[in-house]
Length: 124
Image (cartoon, rainbow, N blue to C red; front, side, top):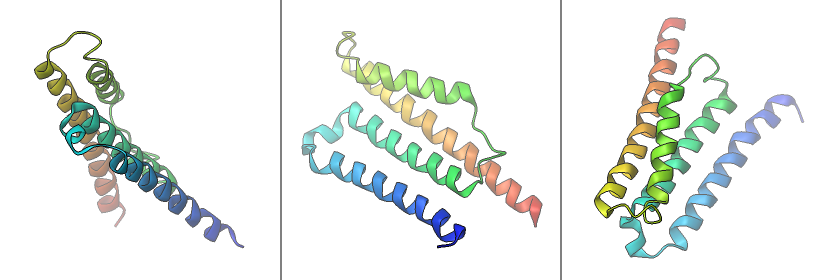
């Protein structure tokens, strides 16, 4: 097998792993749990991981980075959302932190895609 075939297999393996992780979350979660902030954070984290792995295996993200502070804020908000009941926060606050976490992950993805798009336009 040549190197190009081996290099093309890794994205397929990681995509299959992420789809399996998403399937496990969907299969073993009750319908009422999908309105919880934790489910929203978990699904956003799986999507963000898929984006970052795809960029890494394509070597397109080498010169493109999202701001570290944005990712750190997203992780911090996700942790607050996950442990909000232990911290005795109101449900409204937990939902806002979960939404903030998802927004940080989404903005980070937009920044990455925009940098890749600009680099692609400049190379043509």
